[in-house]
Every structure is written in C-alpha cells, then in structure tokens.
Amino acid sequence: MIRELGALTRRELLRLARNPQAIGTSLLLPILYLLLFGQALNFERLIPSNIPGFSPLAFVRGAPSYFSYFAAGMTGFVAVTATLFIGANVIFDRLFGILKRVSSTPATASSIFGARLLAGLIQPIGLAFLVLGLSVVLGDAGLSGLAITAPFSLLGWAEIVLAIVILSVMFASLFLAIGFSIEQPQSYFAVVNTINLPVLLTSAALFPWGTMPGWFRSLTSFNPITLAVTVLRENLFQGASAYYPFGPGIYLLGLLAWAAAVTSIAVLLARRALAPRR
Image (cartoon, rainbow, N blue to C red; front, side):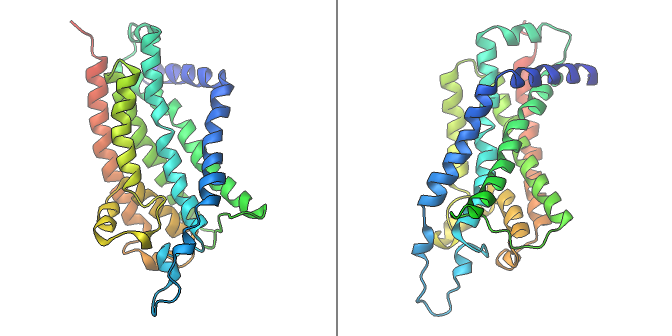
C-alpha cells in the first residue's frame, strides 16, 4: 500500500507542477483578499472609544489592530477555501476518464484517496503561509499589515503549523470524499458551498469579536475555523491569551477532535464511492 501511495502521490504532484497557470491563479485569491478586504474594511472605526471601562483590545481579542486580527483569520479562511478544488479535480478526472483508469489498477481505494489528499494539501497549506508572509510585507510597505507582537517561540510556531495542517486535512478530506461521491460539477459545488459558507460565516475568522452578540459568540466558539485561528492569535499577539478562556493546547485538542470525526466520515464515504460496482 505504501508503494502504491507513493507512486500515485508523485503522479498528482507532477500534474500539479505541469499546470503553473492554476498555481498562479490560486495565488491571486489571498492577495485580493488582503488588498481589498483587509485594507478597505476598517472595523476599528466602529470601536466605541467613549464607553467607560471598555478596552479596544477586547474588540479584537488582544490583537494590536483589526488588520492583524483579520490576517490571522484570513490564514484559516484561505486554508479552507483552497481545499474546495481538491474535490473538484476528482469530478473533472471522472468526466475525462482519468479516475476510471486509476481505479482499474491494483491500487486500493485508500491509496487513491490518500495520494490525492497528500498532494492536494500542498496548495491550501502553502496559501495559508503565503497570507501570513504577505500580511507582514504589507505592513513594511506602509499599508495596514500584520504586527507580530509575541516573542518568537518554537513551540508557538509549531502550534501554528499544526493548527493550519489539521484544519486543511479536515476540510480537504471532506471535500475530497464528496468529490468521489458526486458525479456532476454543479451538484458538487452546490453541496460544498452549503457546507463551506455557513462554516466560514459562523466563525471568528473575519468578524471582530466585539461586534458579535452573545449567542453568536457561543456558536462561533465551537467552530473548527475559530479553534484554528485562535491558536494563531494567541501565539502571534502578546497578551492575547488573556482574552481567551483556554490556552492554545486546548483549542488544538478541540480541532483534533473535529478533524478525527470529519476525516473518519470522509474515509468511509470515499471507500464506499471507490468500491467496485457489481
């Protein structure tokens, strides 16, 4: 199985490398998000500055600015949205007969699923870290930028990497399984948008915490994207931990629980879709 997994993964990586246009196009999305939404949306103007006892830092949970809060959230946002195309590629491979040829080889369903998952994770994880780096560069260029105020910590950056990887694996496996289960592109995008948009919009990735009503804060607290970006914010901004009830390790455990449940369901769906039909 390991040999099959390695061979299929290399095949998927070669196909990705031979399509530089797709890579270039995918880079435009986070750039546009940061330049348009990040620079144009100025929620800091909504911060009430004349209310006694109100701390502006509570508005963005300890981040030095709204853009810094936004940039950390956009990292998780991009890691999720980029996984949509992993499942879409399966749909188009089925239409062109590529998936049928691969399925007719001795490779197991687990190898086929695992190879596409491993190769597909490069894009969302790479885009997520591109957003972090670009956010810092924008600040150096005189625009609103990400200000990393916490001292460097190897453990902290390990938690950041782990949060991004777990979040990407979770949604990539889910959308990949849906791609194996659905035959038409229209149906695929209808299903994944039904999942993707509510999850994104009910997270604390983009909206300032201080603008949310109490019931919505409770809802977002259990969102896997919120769990991931909370790990980033606690490790990127000094003093941010004071605005969260738990440390990064607890949020990582919650994210792992989400990922384990979703990935298990995704594997079952993929095996069922790839099983030989009688």
